[in-house]
Structure formats: structure tokens, C-alpha cells
Amino acid sequence: METSQRIKKMREPALLKYYPIVNEAQKKGRKVYFLNIGQPDIKTPEGFLNSVNGIDQKVLSYQAPEGITELREAACGYYERLGLNYDINDLFVTNGGSEALLFTFIGICNAGDEILTAEPLYSIYKEMAAATDVNLVGFKTYAEDGFALPDESLIEAAITPRTKAILMTNPGNPTGKVFTKKEIEVMVKLALKHNLYLISDEVYREFVYDKQGYLSPAQYQELSQNFILIDSISKRYSACGARIGFIISKNKELMGQLKKLCQMRLAVSTVDQIGAISLLNLDEHFFDGILKEYTQRRKIVYDALQNIPGVICKEPRGAFYFMAKLPIKDASHFIEWMINDFDYQGETVLLSPANDFYLNPEDGADEVRIAYVLNGEDMRKGMSILKYGLEAYRLAFPEVCK
Ligand SMILES: Cc1ncc(COP(=O)(O)O)c(C=O)c1O
Image (cartoon, rainbow, N blue to C red; front, side, top):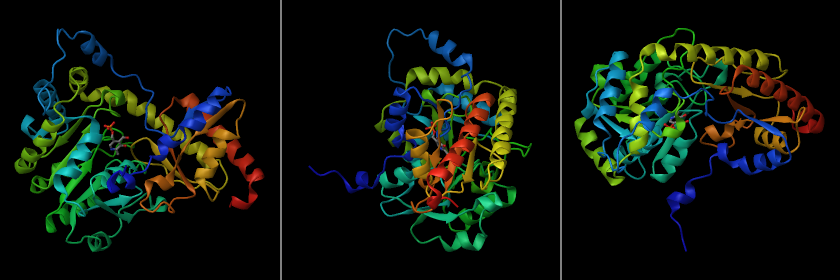
């Protein structure tokens, strides 16, 4: 029996493909530090489980397709604290930011339409595009200049009659890039000039270091009809398992159409939504301690990477990822080798191969993404293991090392 071309175009994300060999390594008693995936170890605020434990319902019924009103109101309150004015009709609850993105792709594109985005990119965008027959078109950004946006004319040259949207990830995964005011204004200007949607994926909004402050295209009134905000509680509240996200726009026609997608999947989990209300009601200081913790972790990783000969990286300004160039030719091979064949005192690390974050899988072959999602002590150990692993790999495979 045949399956669809669409699903055949989808690939298994690299972040999941190593789990069989990791299981084997763990069975042999090897401890693995998971620096490959954006799963923070920070405790989910207690309010979530307290609310869930307090659910007093005889029947866990479906909720409204757009989400529970109290949760949508709590989200509006959260945006108000950021200086953004949304009312509940501008905002639907989704199954994580992932569903918000998928609904966006389905909602604004016909088969063969294009979405323009910066590379390296969040790898799952590629699978979403494949699943919806959308062509992702990338413009390259580079570690050497902190993944700065290329010249406006270069981005504009990539716009075609099939382009429907510019998709920005701010702060960036995997880059840690935080867009400057000037860069945001370039994207706002291009979206308005070419009548495109500007989709801003801001699931890492709070993870902005060095007191840069938060800036979003959401602040540009003139863009309101073109603007779609993608959000999620996964990272901010360390609640990845709760599967709560938001799709937000002031464009009433668009929201009217997107509502049909919400209706199609009936509802989002009642339990998760009830838990999430308490999170969205936390005040703006909730994140202060967490930001301090991530700032320390970033420093640990940056200092360690600076001390590994041949590694090239810049200190990221946001999110919780480093993109690092290693002095090797094939990061995928190195990552597999670290799991299968290497340990330091019984421990090893799992990293993400960066070629997954490019449209052309041959790009980024010598780069890895490191997620600083473990406590300082574990990050320190993980970085030492990486250093020793690179030394051993260089001895074992001098021909594929630089
Ligand atoms: C940039 C970005 N957008 C969206 C998501 C989706 O997150 P979730 O579906 O957990 O809300 C992720 C998850 O890692 C991400 O990194």
C-alpha cells in the first residue's frame, strides 16, 4: 500500500534518531547527559499540579475548541504585562506551539506556497512544511557574526509571487540569536511592502540575556493585520509535557478561518489547560531567578567551549542553545561515536548534529547544537566529557579531523 508523497518527504528529526543507541549505551551502564534537546530540568511551578489536583469534575469533558476562557483571559493578562494589548478573540489555545505552527502553515498557505525563514532554523519547521506541501525558503545567517540578519536586499530577493510569509524565531533555536530593533524593522517593512504574513515564534521570549529587553513585531501597530504570534508555555514555565500553546493574531478573517482547525481537533486537554491558568497568572518576577540560572549555565558552556582547541562559537544572546563549530568533518559521526564507543569514567554526552537545522543536509556538517538545559554541575561535567571525547576522536580518526 502506498503512503502519501507528503509524509514520505518528512524525516525523523535527528533529535530523536539517536535514542535506540542511547538505550543500548544506558543498558551497558553508561550515563548519558542529554544536551541534545530543549527539555529543561527546572521544576515546573507548583501551581500547575496544585490546580490539576484540585480539579473537581465528575466528567473530564471537551472544552471549547478555542480554549478555556479563563486560560485565554490569563494569557491576555500575561501579554498586558508585556505591554501588548490582546483580547481573548485574538488568541486560541493550541496543543503546544507545535500545533500553533502547523495551523499557521495550513491556514495561510496553498500547496507549493513559500515561507521565508533564516537558516539555521528550528528543524521541525521542515517537517511541518513537508506535511503541508509548503516550500521553506531559507536565507543564511552565520555564527561568525552572531547570526545577524543578511542585508535587506538579499532577503527581498528571495521573495517570489508564491511567498506567503516570513517566519522568524526570536530568540532563535538553534542559534540563540535575539533580533535587534533594526532587524525586526527590516522584517516588518518587508512584510508590509510585499503584503506577507510575519510569523513570530517567540516560545523562548523570556530567555533574553544581558538586559537586552524584549522586542517583538507585535509592538508594531501597522503590522497588526499581517502578524501572527506563536507562543507556548513549554520552555518559559518548564512545562513541555503540558502541551499548551497559543496562536495569536488581530486579523479577524484569519482567526475566523483558524477556528475551523481548532474545531477539527475538537479541543485541547482540559487538565493541561486548567494547570496552565496558574502559570499564566504568575507575575513578571517569576522568571528572574530562572534567568539568573540560565545565565550561569551559558557562562559555564561558553568558558568550556573557549578552552577546547579548534571550537568556534559566539556567546548566544537568547534561548538556551549554543551552535558550535567543532574541529571535525562529520558531527553526526562524532555524536554516534560518543554514544557507542566513548565514555569518560562511565559517562558520555548526547549532542544534536547541526545539519538538521539547515534545509540542505550537507550544510552544518561540522557543527553541533548544545542545549544548556541541565544544572551547572552537570553542564560542567558534560563539557569536560565533550573535551575529552574530541581529544580521543582526534586520535582515533585523524583523517576526519581539522
Ligand atoms: C523554536 C520553537 N518553536 C516551537 C517549539 C514547539 O514547542 P511546543 O510544541 O512544546 O510548544 C519549539 C520546541 O522546541 C521550538 O524550539
